[in-house]
Length: 341
Image 1 (tube, rainbow, N blue to C red):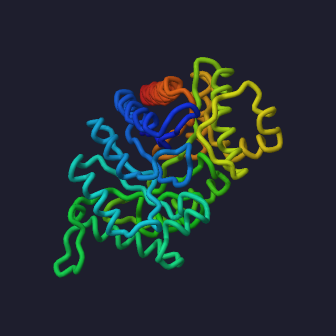
Image 2 (image 1 turned 45 degrees about the vertical axis):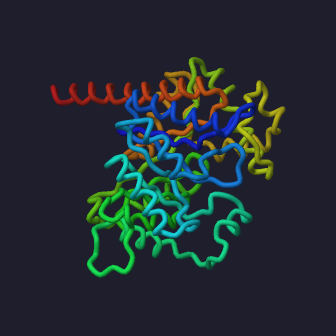
Image 3 (image 1 turned 45 degrees about the horizontal axis):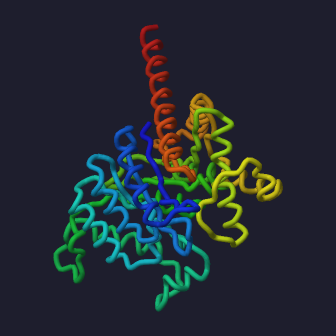
């Protein structure tokens, strides 16, 4: 079970975007030491609490501060960009940092309607996502003789592509193209079961992937005690509640009483959206992650955690890595026991 990190480069209250970027590089180095497989960052716009809008630029910063961990987008919102531009960006990253660059592709604008309008100025409003994915694949693949446009750098780098989604559409597209699929279960889990079923059922092997490969996104807030973890979790609960209310801002400081802050009705809605999670002390997190793995049988986990204090966020990802490693050790012992019988 490979495990990875999705970092939104959060900007906590009382800090700056520059602080957030330094924290992301530090967290990536920490994740590399812990044995995390990938470090992904996501494209979001018009959000003061998220500093990863220029995703490929920030990925270059993180890749330059690390040496072995895979670095990539989780994801780039392809309809916001010309496929050639993204091929050149990630071809450049692959040229600089070798075969450890990933490119996850999303179909949403990464913001509200105003962002959609600003990012697509002068472009058609049509949904050409499948055609744009194919175009991008062509720019990253082998050089075709006579092609009128080529990506330099980009052509021949074969940067691995993932399809990201929170609906059945992405699952169907990933299955059709024979690409790995990551579901945004960390904030939009309603279609999770159906999407994974359709992806696995309809998957068509491709030149890059022989069998389905599914990544499950999980919110993880881990601490030394259950009480501390739930306290730390109030930051993301507040942030999600404010986003739903149209009040964007930096990542809030944790509070002692989340219901007093956002109200019990809104808190229940937020918790429903964030329900694919592991929150608590080390044993609690281990148990909850084991349950998610057993239920959804992912090929890989990608963990995300919006925590106001950077040291506490690093500690959370340390506990999560240790929990997954412990699960692997238990499975190995069980397998050895079964073999000896």
